[in-house]
Length: 251
Image 1 (tube, one colour):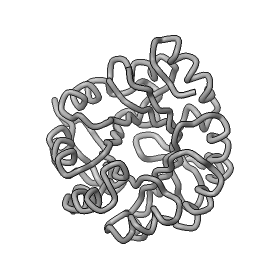
Image 2 (cartoon, one colour):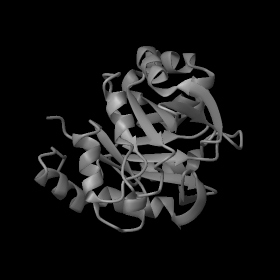
Image 3 (tube, one colour):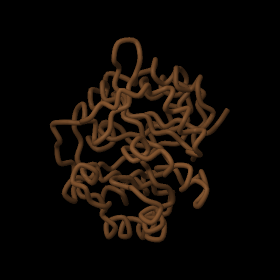
Image 4 (cartoon, one colour):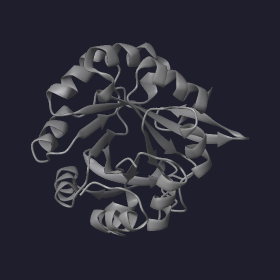
């Protein structure tokens, strides 16, 4: 069995870590540098930094903060927010990012995925898809969940895999911040359509939910925010529980 990654997520707004419900009602959770260091020392396998208002505000990701965090942690760092070009990706990689997360631009300019994958390698390119269920299917939203593209998520995910994406980060808008569990139907449907790793995000509220995301949803990694930020549980508690459920985790 593959080894599952535990990835804390720092959603950044105006220089602070925030968390909301269904992408709204944002609450300040703390300082990104202090939280990044804590999660690194607590045993996180990777860290994801998302500048969640960069696209909406039509600006680039906060480079100085990325650089500072990268000097304090020694695990893979994925950075996203407002990325529109290969030059911006190069800048982020040169300033401490190991991977980039591309969301809105993957929809608006799909060629960016193929171009960046050919230049930097697929292992650097994570496509982030914000999903909302409409009827019996899921559609892709952009601009921080504000705009419905009316694209079928499963079909678009397959397109992104063909374009060279190395991983898919799937954010369930319906479940975001609710702590009622992952959208397992979404994860199961997606895992049957693509071969690249899937990072599950949105909805986990208990240890059981995390195990379900892996065992039923077939996720390759779990992106966590509320559970860790609110100190509901620790990374080591999560890894111990998953190991007891037969899920391989990294020490």
